Image 1: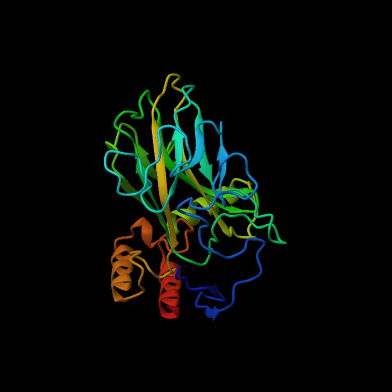
Image 2: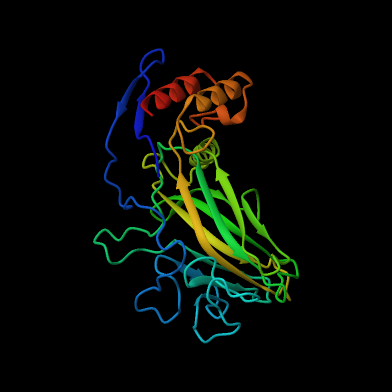
Amino acid sequence: MKTCVLSLVRQGSGLGMLAVAALPAFAQTPGPLTNPSFEIPRSGSVLNIPRGWTNAGDTNEVKRRYVGDGLQPPIQPVGTPNAITPRTGEALVEIRAPGDGGFRSVNTDIVNTTLPTFPFYDPFFDWEGGSVRVGVWYLIPANAPLEGGGEAAVKLNVKFGNQDYATSDPWGETGLFVGAGTTNGEWRFAEYLWTRTAIRREVFFNEAQGFFVLPPFPDHFKIVVGYWGRGFAGDTGTIYYDDVFFEQYAAADFNADGQCDFFDYLDFASAFGNEEEPADFNGDGQVDFFDYLDFAQAFGAC
């Protein structure tokens, strides 16, 4: 994860000073996504849930599956033709439609009790960083398509403690839809870019609604990999997930390609000149000269 940690202090008529600083102490432990391929089981769990993840709903319908677990349908080693296999390794997550139109998922919203500060397993989110990209591999068998109105997707939350600060809910707004139907037993990849502007705008909007007071700023990122029947009883099918991907880019990586270079500056200048929403770099709801100053400072720091 490549980020630039900076703070911009405006004084007087506007032009401020840039300070590159160490990360402050958070309750959340900085770190990447834990166990993204579900290879490690949760220690001491009888629910067969991956380490670093928890489940929402009936564990008979949400579980970690692995090669040779003795359950049906059998999970075969990678490369086995005409079979359900992990994409990589020996494990994956299986979610079956509950038939009652309900919601089922695994998510990172669980506390790590092995560490003294009890941080969440949610990956670290840098408020001063840039856009976030999340992706996932998924497989829907040909003989168990998702049908009856339900859809699979990935829901995202930016949080501090137990408080949601911003949400990307694909079932209600926009975000990472996986969909329904079938992939004919083939692994497919879906990804979603949640931009710095979109995150900040929602955080400031929710603060204005009185849901919380800033600071503190959000510092961890909840990932929900799930299925929702949308209330349609009789929904059927099964979906398998593997190899979840999470990355936060540097603040000045405007095009989110993993690099801070002159193309980012050109892209920002173009968006700024056209007063496009992504040029609202500070997320205050306006495209103005403060956005240009903030981006220039972040770009220089990178």
